[in-house]
Image (cartoon, rainbow, N blue to C red; front, side):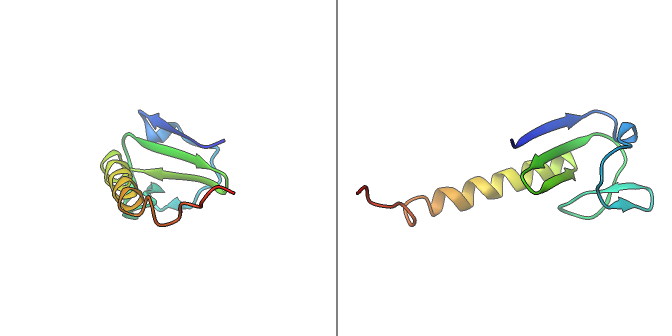
Length: 78
């Protein structure tokens, strides 16, 4: 199952098998350290951590990319 979780304090994360940055965990999108709050996304292939701003930007890009291409891969019934 895939889901996103808001994390108020990134210093509480100690048990994730994610790439550890020198000063804590690194944001999947920008690569900068995550030192305050953030978003954890758990997908089929594993988990990623994002700054709130980076999660917002990534979400907007996903929506735009999928919306503009929404009819290109529609299969006809039958």
